Amino acid sequence: MSRNITLLSLVAALFLGGCSLKPELNVPKMQTPQSTQEALNVNKEWWKAFNDAKLNALVDEALNGSDDLKLSALKVLKARQTFGLSEANEMPNLTANANSTRQRTSDETYAHNRAKYTDNAMGLNLAYEVDFWGRLSSQSESNWSLYLATEASRETVRNTLIHDVISAYFNLASLQARMKILEQTASAYKASYEFRAKQQKVGTISDVLANQALAQYNNVQASKESLMESYKLQQSTLAILLGKNPQALFEMQTADVTLPSALVIPEGVPSSLMENRPDIKESLENLKSKNALIGVEKAAYFPTISLTGSYGQQSADLDNILKSSANRWSFGPTLSVPIFDFGRIKQRVSISETDLQSSLVSYEQSVKKAYKEVHDALAKENLAKSRLSFQEEELKAYQKVLDLSTKRFNQGVANQLEVLDAQKGVLSSSLNVISTKQSLLTSQAELFKALGGGWRESDLIATK
Image (cartoon, rainbow, N blue to C red):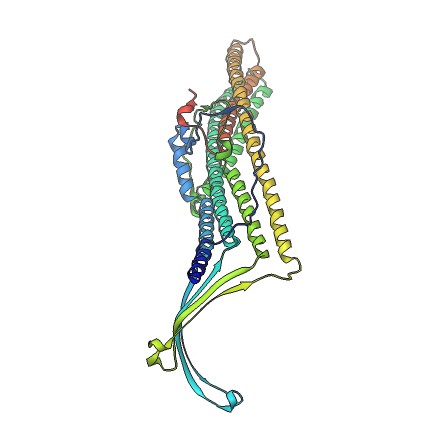
């Protein structure tokens, strides 16, 4: 009976293992804003709320072709494989072997009885470390947390990629709109200059007025060329984001695009921000991983118990190797106990504890960064909306000034300088309106990225 109890205890120890020495993890609580939106859910495809088919197609192309995203996927795969390896290390290791050797002994051994003999053997070897102190399970737990952290990191790369593609799209649309305005303005200035040049030839206006019109035309042309340079650079940036090859980079042509309507976003910060931000998830999983590694290092203070065994056949004559008389086996535990290591284990534990403290600081830092990015994006969006409202009114006023000054000039009661100033005002205001619309849309993209996603499409309203 006692032998059966001992055997059962051994089997239980073999398969159940032992306790874990990792410390209890206390994640710090941080004060967060009270003005939150409880009912709003995150939409992972938030950019589709802009209702822009070209934008949707570019984002889809980037998600399929981005090199950064491909690298992130491979990192996730490697982390998953590493966890799989740590799981396998908790299981017994069974190997098969076979060998055949021919030997001759020395005359200086075995009482000077020189002999030749053959040794044929085949069998199975079993090795298993009993995880009494949770070293192997803690390592697996650490690797699992690293896997989850790598997945969260990939989500951060994905969100950043989407944001960068959308920002590049808005920038291209803004540059196209501004170039069209400059092109239309240049055509008007050219016609104005040609008309003034004729007037100057017949002596109705001075050389000053004619050259002012020419200078204004050349200034607009130079501004247009400057925008074209920015446009070409933005095209190549977008091509890289989409994962295009070098040939496509030099041949890429962007179709005409327009700025979509801005969205009306609900006020407040979603209460699920801490759950949705992938960088916060990544920091939290790294924190769990470092905590589990402390258990791995502390387990080194305690004995390592391994069970080893073998079973097989051995015979000098290969014809007899399968006989029952050729059977052999062995089984027994191995105990390894640290005695003097001159502080090596203690230092490794201390290093792990320091790593845990660093991860705690990184976690707090990621939370603070998340709320800062949300705060800044909300502030930029609100200020852009306010600035756009004033600039649109400014443009209307300059257009009225231009109409009035042109009529007054044609009636001979105003000079050309008044018309030129009004034209400059309309041009500057038109360009500012386009730039601010782009800033508003970009700030909304930054807000969605900062939130780790966006609100449900039903919660968002496109402005008319």
